[in-house]
Length: 585
Image (tube, rainbow, N blue to C red; front, side, top):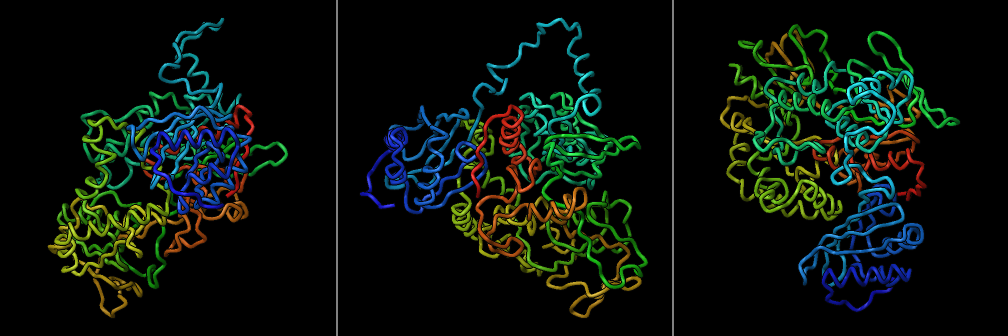
C-alpha cells in the first residue's frame, strides 16, 4: 500500500481519522494510519483468535477481510490532549472491546485490540451482579441448589467444558466460566484444591511478587507477603475454589478420550473413587501447566547406582539428607531452590551445571516489574486489569527489541553480582540473543533462575559447583563426568525439567491428535528449543487448535489470570451458539 505524507496526529486525532476511514470502509486510508513497521495484536475483537499482524500491508489485508463482518464503531479515547498513546474503547458486532495504541510520528507503531464482553451475554459482575434472590417456584436455597448441581454434573447432566487440571490455571478458567454461566467441571488427581503446590518441596516460595500473581475476581489481601510460600498459596487456592462455587472432582484422573466428529463432542474416561466414569463434554481444556512429564536422563549405569535417585518433582525436603553426599544435576530454578534447601539443612550439595543459565536477582526482577506490578503502581491508580492489558499490548518482535535494551542495562547495573558468580565458575547467559529471562520463558520456559538466595551460596562455595561438564555414566557410588573426573554421591537429584505439554495429549488422547496439534508453547523465535517459523504468538495456547474442541490453558499466575478471560469468552460464545469467524494464522 502506498505511503502517504507523515502527519503529526495525536492519539485523539488519530482515532477519529481511523473511525472515519473504517466507517467509510476505506481500507487504504485506514492502513495508511499505520507505520510501515507497525504491528497490530488482536485478541478476539477482529480475528476470534490471538494473532499479531506485522506491517502495514498485513494490517490492511486483515481490515479488508474483517471490516464488513465486525463493523467496528463508537470509538472513544482516554488520553491526555496531545498524547501519542492512549486507551481505546469501541464495539463490534460481537461485543464491547478495548484497545491501546502507541503512535510514532503520527502513525500507529503498536495497536492492541481485545474483546471484553459479548453483546446480550455480558458478564454478570459489578453493576450486573445477581441479586442472590430467587424468583421461581423452587423452594431450595442457595446451598441446596449448589449441592444438587455438584451431584448432577457428570451424572444426570454433562459439563459443556471439561477442565483437566485444578491448579491456578484450571481454577481461574473455572471461575470465569462459572460467573459467565457455562457449565464446567474441573478434574484433578490431587485430593484437595491447592495440593499441586502443597506437595512441592518444603522451602518453595513464588519467585514473582504478589502484585503479579493475583487470581481473577479475588485478589490477595493487602497484607499478603511479597513472595508467597507454596503452602499458603495452596490454602488460598482451596478457599478460592470454595468461594467461587467451582465444580471440582478431586482424586479423579483423566485416562482416555476420543472425539466424535458426528456428535461434535468428546467421549472421556475418568477414574474416580476406583471407578471408571464416562463424560461427554463438548470441549476439553488441558490446564496442566505449561509442561509435560518429568524429564529424567537415562544415564548409563543408573540401575547400578547404590544410592537414591529422585527427579526434582519428587523432592520434598533436605531434612533427611543430613550427612549425605548429594549431587543436583541442573542449574535452573528448581536446582537452585533445592540446593539452598539442602544447605539450610546442613548439607553441602554439588550442583552440576551442564550448560549456561540466566540468573536474575529477585530485587532486580521486582524493580523491572515495578512500573506495572508493585505497590507504587497501585498507588498511582494502575489496576491489575490495566497492568495486564499494557503488558499484553506490546507485540512479540518489539518485546524482543525492548528486552535486549533492558538486559544490557541489567548486565551493567548488576555487574558485581554477576562477577561473583563468574568467579565461582558459574556459566551465565542473558539468552542466546541477549533478550533475557522473559523471552526465554516464552520460548522454552526453561534455562533461568530468579535468585531468592541461592546465588550467594554458589558464589561463596556453600553450594559446590561443577560447571560445563556432563555426566558420562554412573557407577555404584559415583558420577563419572565428561571431563574424566568422578564425583562421589549418596543421592542424585535430577533437576532436569519437564517435557512439552503435547505429551499429555499423546498419552491421554492419541499420538495422531498430538501430531495434528503440533507443539505447544514457544513462538517460533528460531532460537534453541524454539524453532521457526515465526508465529509471533505462543503456539496453541488460549485459542483454537487444529483439533476441534481441544484447548490449552497454562502458564504462570499472571498468564492464567489474563488469558482465562479470553478463553472463557471463546467458550461462552460457542455455548451461546454465536456465529464465529476465526481468522486463520
